Image (cartoon, rainbow, N blue to C red; front, side):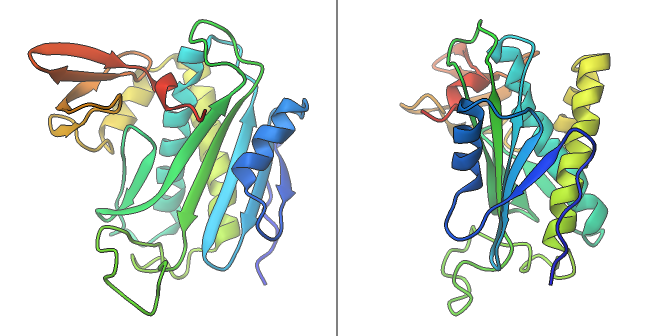
Length: 237
């Protein structure tokens, strides 16, 4: 049986059973005023689901950098526990790829959608499949994968959750003390689609993903014009 995960100081895990969604639970707990650092999680047989409640002290558009921070934290965590040939890449919108296949995602919600307001709370959720969605029909979803499929059978889900929170905390501290420079450098090494034609996250066509601004807003070139797609546009409604 998997041991309960242990978290750094100021982080408190909340184990969930059954069909309770940790992301939805984190949002409801944040709305009721729970402490920052609360980590609802569910370690099921087939999926690792967890969320972190944060209390930003900066306007929402800057605070949304935590989506990137948590993505890098997951990449670092899996990199420390998985075989060395396992590669993690991140889509701008929070989707995660492991060895090229889609393998989970990050989600985000906040107390406000006003990019200039400081949110009372911000929640980042993580969902990663541990085993194939349909193990009896391999190849049914060729672009989807799982940690089991990618050789991570020995990765303990509780240890991965611990490592995700720990590595995320390291990058939060780096961002707070040193700014976003190191974060940008780390992210560029694992970012997907830069320089490629992609679907416009705002809908309605495609564009070339040129890169990101200081707060990781997407710079998209379409019809001869470059537009900005802020990270706050990804917030759950």
